[in-house]
Length: 434
Image 1: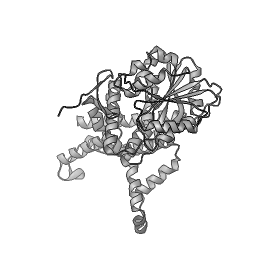
Image 2: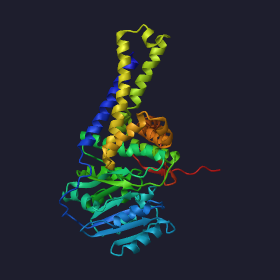
Image 3: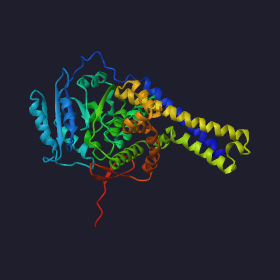
Image 4: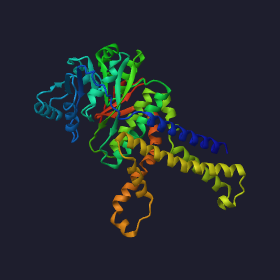
């Protein structure tokens, strides 16, 4: 009985946390633009690159097409002159002769974080005091620079970042990961901000000043860390500056990935967060609004089966047991409704999808069709129905990922195996000798 009460309480708590995240997301002015964009200081974009995929050109070209009244310097860094990204960058520079853009070779690796090592080299060539750091797979709207620098009018704003959306999930595995990013991550960040000011940064795009970067020791101080974005934001926040969120959403466009790659990415992400914020990450499992109601319901059914061979109606149950059993079953159904509703709305808001699309998707998953219609649309409707339940699948698979985050300290990043030490520093793992 005590176990059932505990599980029921955890189920209720998970639903309450999910509703809290949902409310925090609904209150944030996502996609809103600042009307006064007169503040337009000179900015330098630092863009570390490695490799090439079908989405790279569109992502890089979006930075050449910025509608910004101030001067812009674009610095693209690669570690190897044979990197296929070099040819693409040269083509883009030739196609946009008006842009102040440069390809920079950064062969010397200054630490285990190869991306930050490239940033160290690029930082030395920056001509402007306002710096933008962006991942290679990030595509931005034409007004992005004009919007992201506005909070830096205030000297107390030390860093500006923004939410990002996975906009090209071409495989089922990527769609599963997209739930974690598009439906959950940004709402969890906003929930955290209701408790205290942000003391970390989101790495897709970060805007800061040379002054704040110098105060934390420059990128050289971050070259040994895995979560360089977290460390940069955290160090700036510790010095009394605010971490701001720009309402503009950028796109992250990744190459096609299967389950193995997506799982490795999610595990690396989980271990990164666990190292940076071990206590909050440990308790993050309490927000799983699919796992706890499901577990509570399973426990209730096991209890019923063990008490009577005649089932629920034929057993000799106390009123409290019956009430608890019905309560857990109700939480199970309520959990599904709340989880799916919050996931669809948060995903829709981030991607600016009409809410009607969610209703159509749910209708396609649950309504009864005629036999002819079912035969005609079987493959499509089956896939749509499966996608409806991706938030539930994501939650269930999140449980082993959460556990594995505490059961190991190695990650694979950019083809390199690394060990994460307490505090977040990286140590390369030597390959096993044959």
